[in-house]
Length: 443
Image (cartoon, rainbow, N blue to C red; front, side, top):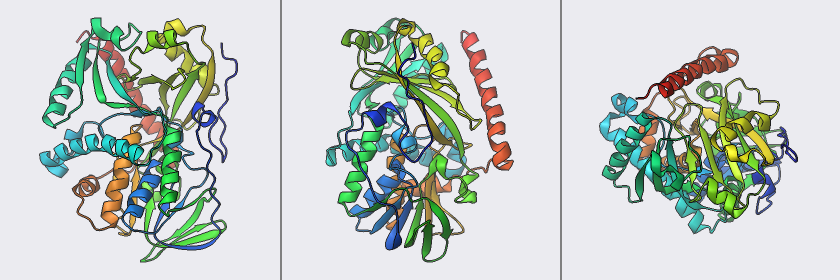
């Protein structure tokens, strides 16, 4: 039953997602014309850019923000809405560069990142359906063993929120599916309406004096002690530049563009469910995510739709019919939804780096140019952390977090734009094969 599906389109307006249809405010900012002068110019109107702008404005900087399309047009306005602790994957791999103390600090920053989001929503009274409660889902017993280790590590880091490991027989407390062998409940993570959060943050930035411009794609950057950022009809002169485009950086800066791979991710939204149906699927209204490389993630919206996402694509081509592609994945988890209509389908690009750690730093060749990108699909909290770290660095404040991220080297994907995606797709196929073999192994 795929009636009333809203097909994805690529335009200067928001993707026709459930989020765009349920946005609680409509914002419009003018295109850049003429010349603007500021302390800092930010390119990119998603979470990274907006939160850097807020942090800088609160420190007294004058800021101009340029967005090529609409505020939160990219992943910030389309993502799964899951606010989950942590940054990066396998942080111990970086101990040789930043030391064991640095690894521990990154883990603490991954917890602080969620608190930044919490405090931003509270401070600016942003209505974005923030709901606490999240569960990691174990696909195999080895995942469950990992959850026990995660719980102990989080406690050692001083994590103050409830953590509870569930065995297979307890899983119907959180999910109406027989697919999982256990879980880890985390009441310090949760979910929200991502576009409404971004729109609220844009309004907050504007209230602080940030000058926001939409439909203002950057056509050229002249680097130097004063950075000159050109659009089709305007110019910004600034002392500092922040590039916060993530998967949509394109060719704006080849040095950074070669270190982040755009990958497609997709979500479907069902018709509104009854209260009884919703309780059967997700009894405690948590966000949930499994542990596979090709993971599933899902949650309920405020009006009780199931939002079901996943299926990373590295080819650069979206499926012809996202709903037809994603619906079978949803039914593997929830076969009881076979007769439920899909109302919305959409996708977008996430930015992935080779080592899966967010890339936050400054250009060696241009020390007044800063950047944040490559959140690997976990950007809702990491972007907010990046905004704070970038603002601290620009303000000359001591920022151990910025220095730690900046020390980690990031590989440029080989082969240029033509070979980058096929090479990563081949690598991900290997990891998916390992996933499949692991699932066949009772260990």
